[in-house]
Every structure is written in C-alpha cells, then in structure tokens.
Length: 166
Image (cartoon, rainbow, N blue to C red):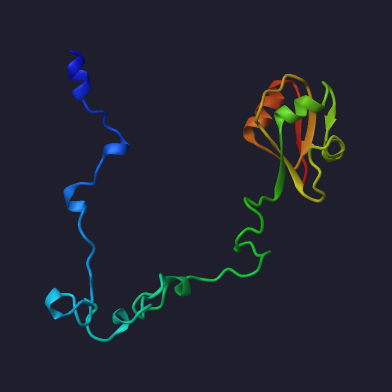
C-alpha cells in the first residue's frame, strides 16, 4: 500500500506540458526558395499587406465610408441629444425615505429649505425627487418636485402627505 502512494504522481502546474499539436517550432520566413517561405516570405507581391507596418486601422472598411463617419454627430454639451456631461446625468437630485427618517421627527414639514438645512438636497436650482428606499413609520408632510410611486405609497401609508410642486 505504501509503495502505491510513492509511484502515484501528483498533477500540478509544475509538471504539465503543452499538447503535441501546440508544441511546434515557429515558422522561419525569408530563408531561401527551398524553405517554401523564401523571397516574399508569404506576403505576396506588392500591395498594402506586403509592406512593413502596412496594416489598415481598425476603422478601415476597404474604402467604404467607415461606420464612425456614417453615424450622426452629437454636438454641444447642453443639447438634449448629446452625451451626458457627468455620468448618469438627471434633472433631479434624489432623497431616499431612510434619509428622511434619519433626519426628521414625526410631524415635521419636509421641503427644499429643510432638506438643504439638514444636508440632504444641497444643489441649488435642481429639483428634488423623493425615492422609496427604506421604510418610514413616522408622519411627515413632504413637499418636493417629484415622488416615486413607491415613496408616495409608503409616506401616505404612514399617515403623511405628499405635495408636488412645479
């Protein structure tokens, strides 16, 4: 039994070797006619592919107008159709229910001024949207530009009110 363990070989990365078809010598080009890869070294005669460094760029489509030139251009950072200036740009600043519960007491009035005073919605002239993350068990009178459906449902279920402003 002890002899069987000694002869058993442990397989690991230290004793692996490549498969037979992968262990081939590299192709040596430009070593005379007899090699089969002499003279033009497998590149053919003339043309872009025969030159050193002669490889078309990734956008080259054989003379056809490339896709990046065919697509429409989106110019101007403030245009509605242009790419966002900052990641995930929105027209509102979010405030979640768990933030409201953490900062306000039962019966408080929540509006843009009280949110800014408590450090929740500090961006000036940006509308506030109340989102439904977290649970609310206190009565709050909330005034904001927008409410998610979940947030409105939770606030009203707790006995509070939701007032939308323009």
